[in-house]
Image (cartoon, rainbow, N blue to C red; front, side, top):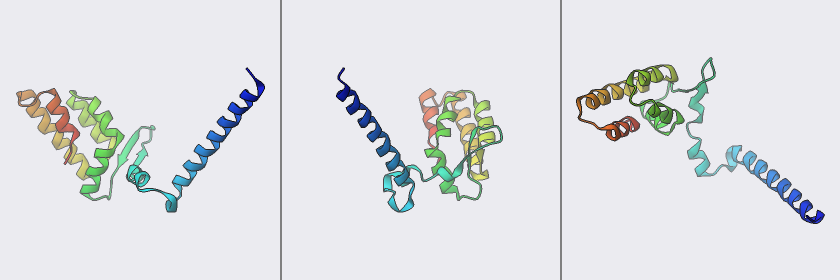
Length: 136
């Protein structure tokens, strides 16, 4: 390959690195954030780590509607749904990884309702996952 072509590629990679880092820093500035970034990171303040490094959702002190909305947008909900159909593990997950009494009660009640309907034959697998995935 030609030296000038290699130099062009190196300069291009350097430019892309500079632009992506610069734009990332701009998005963290409150006055320069767009609405999409703000909506995406709306509930980041409620995410933290527990003493052994697992991600948790700490909703203590938040209103019930905020707790439910944060849970529905959380990555933890996807982890929670992967535990289906082990309802006892789902209950343990909710107790250990979710803080906030209102949210814990709603999740526990949802698990109990879906468990009863699933084992009675009222709900199939897809219906049970859908019911667990939409907390109201």
